[in-house]
Length: 510
Image 1: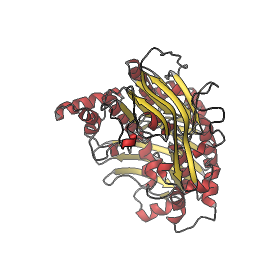
Image 2 (image 1 turned 90 degrees about the vertical axis):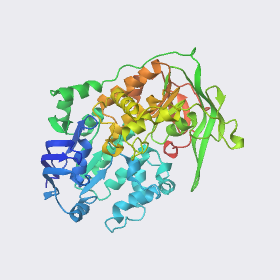
Image 3 (image 1 turned 120 degrees about the vertical axis):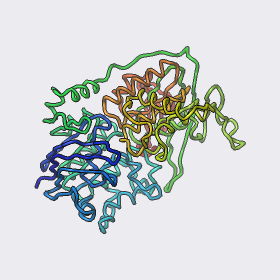
Image 4 (image 1 turned 45 degrees about the vertical axis):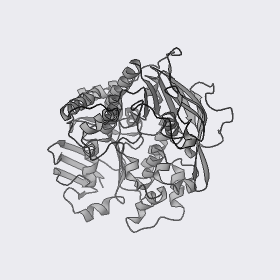
């Protein structure tokens, strides 16, 4: 039985945008097939078309057969029967896939309950442990916001493969995972499904796990073939560009000790209370960031990187320690119930979940220019639209209409919009949490070059990432986060003492 056959698939969204144009794809049993391409090339639209999750009013032509059954134009009852049991799905945005009011255990258990089934006793926690979630009984009782993006990705993978489906559709399933864990998780997925359709921007990952590759550009298939051969000797211009962009330069070495300090944290710690006890996310970290410097923080999913970023930016109050921004102790007045104010735009964040960080009701021009209004700058509607267009062009989105809503963007495009919004504010400190995790290699190269340009112009940057090779290509310094403890990439300690919480596991950190 052939898991998937797509023939002459064309998808046109209600606004007239043709996302896919005459796409053909065939995946045989046991095959791992990757689809790669730039953000907005149609990769996620392909997955949604297979699942029948396209917006109302979308026009589709062609044929999609799953296990021999035609699904294009099929009733919702037929599609619902296929989802989960025959076709597993790992969405690109793990936060959006979860109900924020329910626990992670409920999220995974839904893979059974939507089909009026019950998991075997202990099946959920056992499966979570199998993808590297430590203390799964305690963790499963927590809510999605208490998990990192990488941990949620793993929980969603467990839900998608719960019934050993004929076909699993995985849309950027490892974008927030380090290389070793990504390999382990994909190996597990391959063992729990009949065939895999992998959407990924990570060409190295594709080379290791896919047997065949289809390259999409502007909704059309421009090249296909065996993964190892195609990525080693591409022929289509689009593929050549993607492969070239995946090559990362050598690590930067820069000393900026004479530059003024923009942000500094001293012995900051942060713990969270949850059912079952306390979790220490950051343990006695020290960090100084100077003007014109990019400091990178590496670490596994759940190691405490995102919590550290929020502490440095003043978005969260530490349990102990000092946060100094713009030369002042940020929480000196905390005993009086308030934080010392900063000038608007002094700190600008780029969050790990770019889709949720954009107001879905606002056109892009309004989102992009809102930081200017926060600084009391007054511009006409026409001027704001022009400023927004220039901001989009700066991040490689010149072809995106400023009147579009965030819901019409891919996750990668939303990520670039979030970066553009942060840059509009001209911040003294830019904090970027996984700024390239959802981007194809070409877009990632554009963004990292832009971040380097912003730093060279005088801004200070703190970049959280799991991608060491890419981060090493543009950061001035790199530190590692493990079990809440911050250290230099080299052996010398930066934040914790020799024992500073090393007994705890990385998955116990946010």
